Image (cartoon, rainbow, N blue to C red):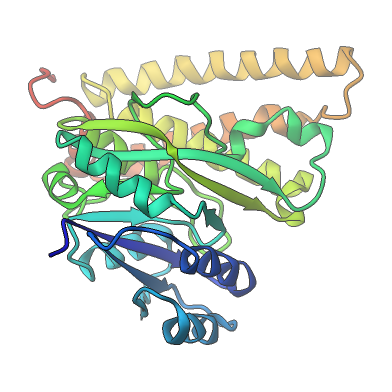
Amino acid sequence: MKEISIDIVICTYNNAPVLEKTLSAISRQKFSSRIDCRVLVVNNNCTDETPDVVKKFSASAPLSVRMIGEMVQGLTPTRLRGVNSTDAEWIAFVDDDCLLAEDWIEQAACFATEHPECGAFGGQITLDWQAPPPPYVQNHLYAYAGKNRGEKAKRVGWIAGAGMVLRRKALEESGWIEKQFLKDRIGRRLVSGGDMEISMRVAAAHEVWYNPKCKLQHIIPPHRITREYLRRMVFGLGASRHNTLALKWSGSYLTWFFFSLVYSLGFLGFNLIQMFRELLKNQSGFDVLFAINPVRGWWSAMWSMLRMESAVRRQMLGCALVPNKSRN
């Protein structure tokens, strides 16, 4: 009899060549017979060879691999489709550009078994550069979601989406399945924050951990280290920063609005100081939009929240607070 069940959910959009590498790494997993592990690929309107890639591994992989479709474009609805189309005790979101270490499933199952109060955990993420990153990328490595918090497991406030493992019951209790507030990547549009919403809402009532024994490589192709791509990415991260802070706000929307406005001005000032430091050091990473775009993203998110229906806004503000924390 199986002791633990894990469904690996891979959301994908027109990334067939790299998805093949992801599935190949999963097919090489070595794990004990006590673990029931299956793979679900959620096809988000792919027009490339994704169906052929999945069909290949469905026929040859040592564990079950199947594919379903999600017509609503975006990572958040695609993740939701994956959750609603699986039934394992644990759900693992593995990005379609991530390579799991051969013992990742075994390590995930061991950690889940040993931490009965854990609602979610994430692992050590190493960036796998497909081309040498230029200096301006080296100055903004935070944008690429590499995660190394050391070699000891520890409790954390949130985890990255790549390799995020969730206890289904904890996810259900967080309310995320019924209502999602933050958008994530939509096609080629670089929106972010959906993974932080999930982990922060789970963390409001459950333990969230970093487990360094779950190791994966995050593939970074050459097109993702261009200046234009990074400019767009830091814009999206600026919007995400606004929204995720709002999830922990304990006051009213009016107080949040004024706090957010003042915060953004300080945010802008800090980024401009960093930019001038790069200029004075004659670093080739200097780029005005790297300094301004995060704040432009923040202001964009402020505007979107201002236009929200007041009822939705009230639901969103503070939704990741611990249940017993008072709110105005």
